[in-house]
Length: 126
Image 1: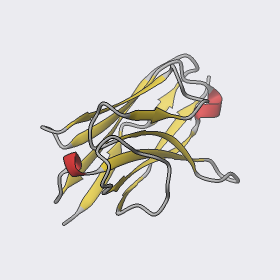
Image 2: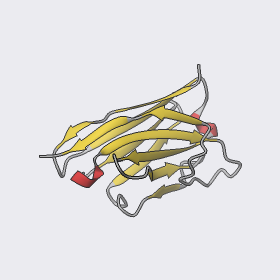
Image 3: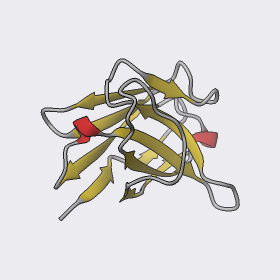
């Protein structure tokens, strides 16, 4: 069965940290670009960060630059999103998605992805 599973969400105080995981089964994440999306009720889903097939290329939304770090562990077939200095506006459901791109050093926030994972809720509140 081909699937992505996002996990690691929870309740954290402002200024805290969380690490989200996106684990794949049935296919290799090494062959895909992975994007993290955030969905807040009443707002459009936004791309937060992505990592290309090669981990050398990553991208971040301006709102998370300098605070979030995306990484890929091909041995564990998992992509991580380390989130530091979390703020209330980071609250939302975070999901990961995979797309096979011909360019090894590219990723973006397109929504026509090959695989989507179920989201994990992140709540930043005191």
